[in-house]
Length: 316
Image 1 (tube, rainbow, N blue to C red):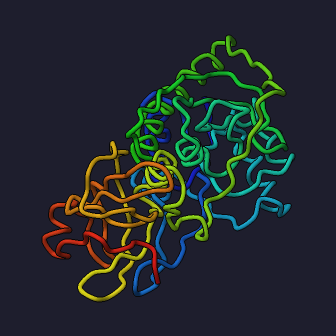
Image 2: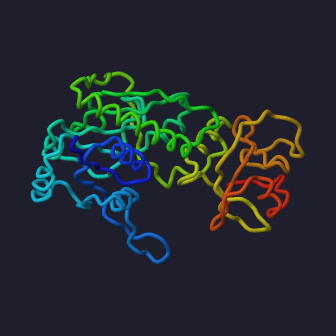
Image 3: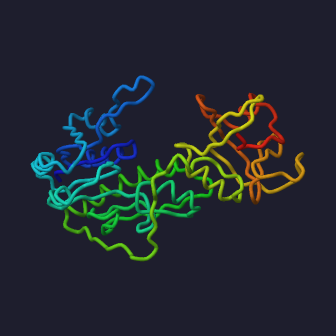
């Protein structure tokens, strides 16, 4: 099939690669324009941009799809279908209707649960035990289109958002290839979403990344793994007499037991193993990252920080 591919981050690349390897003719790639990045603020092309250039495919980076000239050029590709995977721009009706079979979108949740920008993170932060990767026909609503392919994915209690992201990217690539095979054969069927169980996955804001130790340990655990590795849940630790920002990347709820701290308050370090009191229960920290440094397991962190028993995380 003649395919327009629309995507931007690393999550989109396996889908792009799978479609190309399946023999589809990718006639154009649309991605977000290069952005300043790094200390030098040099313009950096998106992962999809770089992948398309390596394969000699035309790359377009319009800043909006509402411009009439952009829409005319999009139509001129005479595509059978557009495949959209984490593109990052809104698609107006003229774009949605330009390909013969419209636009198919890969979404990382069991719709209608977690419509919106951050379905992977929100599912884990909410403690969901399973999710899905789905292919849907795009319309002008926010992830409201009919579903044509779906695969349920369990979420183990220790899985991070990064791990689920990588798994969904691979599973989603295979699912989209299957969808296009069915579409080409005239067998692809679409089913409307339920009007029950609708939830929204708002973009992760910086203001919600700091850890609230007054919450139950299980909720703090879900908050940490839902934001790991990026942007990362964090708090201020007392290290060598100074308050230092530390990201918490991996944790495990731990059973209460006798500690060196009597009547601990939420956020207080209970022992040298970096077990921390929560509003209810205890959380053991397994992996962290100090600002400007690489991530490390707790024993390595403690060797540099010393015994933090009795200190209170979050003050300052």
